[in-house]
Length: 372
Ligand code: NAD
Image 1 (cartoon, helix red, strand yellow):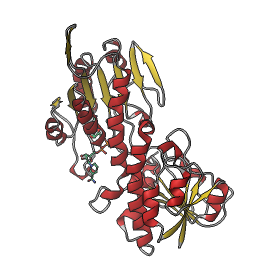
Image 2 (cartoon, rainbow, N blue to C red):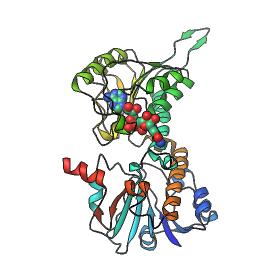
Image 3 (tube, helix red, strand yellow):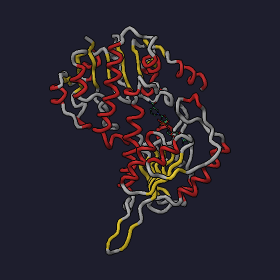
Image 4 (tube, protein in one colour):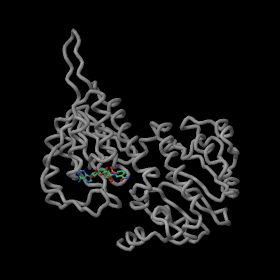
């Protein structure tokens, strides 16, 4: 039986990638070693892990030594003291930042990074990007609502009538649609924009208004993702978004392009003219931000606007995020354990495997690195 080690994440993200329920479902296929306190920040105690069949281990060094497969989220463990062959399963942002990989090359390590999961029917249950995006979109609206000096819904009392807050959502993929749905449920008036024409009907089906800007580039072979836009079109977006931004109370930006710097949609001159007290939540902060003033992992006030660039926003909803992420890890581990001899033949394992025996083998990444 394989030995699987579950590591405790740092306080930055508060996520645990496997919850007790999923360990209980896998306990006849693998032996689990859980670093003490691994689930605490997400609301799962050591006792729950023990009841599910795991062994609680105090020392991280011991877990790294004893395990064949090591599970972590977005921070790779220090493997300098480990000599045996190991498999590490993580969720890195490798298409954008390959620097963490350097510490694994040349070691007897296989690394899978689940952000590279293909968006196929078979891999749907393992799509962590969608889990993270859904929770981020929801949490972005709650964070904006908490920071805004006004209510979201229309409220009428003897003192008068409060108009509903105006939300502008830039990028209406998984995170953007969840943000729209959440803001609508809370009573806000919502407008949204995306470069993918297909998103228009999705935005409208949630009761929001779609902002049409003609001339976007699309590519049918991009797997449903957006592609980089021409400078002319980006200039056009900028002027339309400027007019919308100065009327908004809150802006949630979610626009991303896999492997590229996030498109810049909101410049300083627009922020300068926004209403005092308004809020921007930039969910693209990790890949450079959609707003020119975003500071990664900071909340700051500039031109009387609160700008939120927390990349680990899901940590504010760590239990729900961990439940979804654990469902994805569970499906992936099941797939890996069920297909030990499929190396090189299986699309899911092929596309997510980044390093094999210390060598960078992922073709997508090799191509990207060669472009730099
Ligand atoms: P993402 O996180 O990479 O990007 C977020 C959104 O930003 C996208 O909707 C994109 O079109 C938009 N965007 C990019 N550049 C922009 C710009 N300059 N201005 C405005 N918006 C811009 O993407 P995502 O949310 O993960 O999903 C993108 C697509 O993949 C969607 O069509 C989604 O339905 C699809 N998807 C498919 C599967 C599956 O098949 N298993 C799973 C999840 C998502």
